[in-house]
Length: 362
Ligand SMILES: Cc1ncc(COP(=O)(O)O)c(C=O)c1O
Image (cartoon, rainbow, N blue to C red; front, side, top):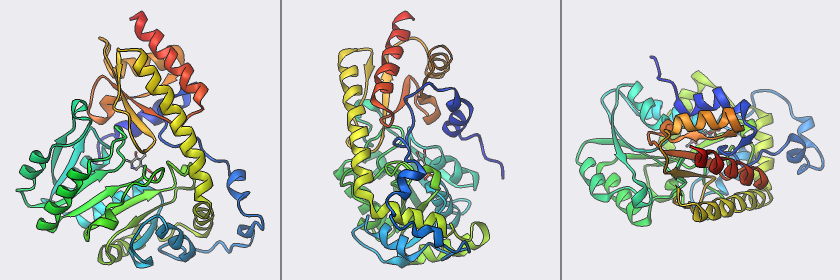
């Protein structure tokens, strides 16, 4: 089976190394190995035996992961090499050709194109900035008249940073329940604040996440799935054919990070909120820009009013000024730039000033 290019990942692969001012990264400024292991005074990882370890994830790690949720036991968790793989495993395990899936646009391409690649029918519900990127309940009700197998949400979202309203989520859970549909909730941007998890709220809710974004540890490639035991059991059959385990070293370091999550999250909150303030002030002072400021997550979707299209803008401003953005078109929405509140605040200030100067010259 052939997959189309994953536009945002392709864009990052092609251009990220040219960035001088990276204003688009979704991962909060990464921790070094030294910073991580300094949490472990005794360096107990030096004595780890590098066998396959516990196949579905070390028990100590699962315990730490469970501390991020209100419900569940170890049987509800399986550990993966990142959230992307966690989503892939859920989609490939639960969906078959002909199944109907609901996803949202602008959104992360994996949620539409992976189900399409296995022959699912995908209903895409559009989100609009004038509605604060909130979905429409009537459209959901209409879509749910079909025999929907899975709804895929991303809370907080990439690229908009928005969490769906409580009212919408209540309706979604009720309609999904009536249809016995799964909700796959990519929660890779959850954790900075007190965002709820779908896996705590719904009997067929499956939440995926990782240490990549708010925990600043994308290089560990460590994620997980939390869901009903029968789903986790099915996924664990599949993992024997693909990854076996994530290995004792990654599991140990991930457990170490999560046992110090308050310190890591405090650092991330400070970086994100300082950058958000800078962006908010910038947008308020320059009416050619607009943004729905997110209440959670690490990213937002900066709109602009100018003739130049977003792909051209992102390419040219990188080439001429070294300022790096992912264009909105990679998420199915033009005249926007995906912004990450993750960099050094001085970089954010300089990069935005260069963006303004560039557009004013146009
Ligand atoms: C919505 C979403 N899910 C998953 C991923 C990948 O996460 P991980 O690094 O944990 O595989 C990303 C990365 O950009 C993302 O934006």
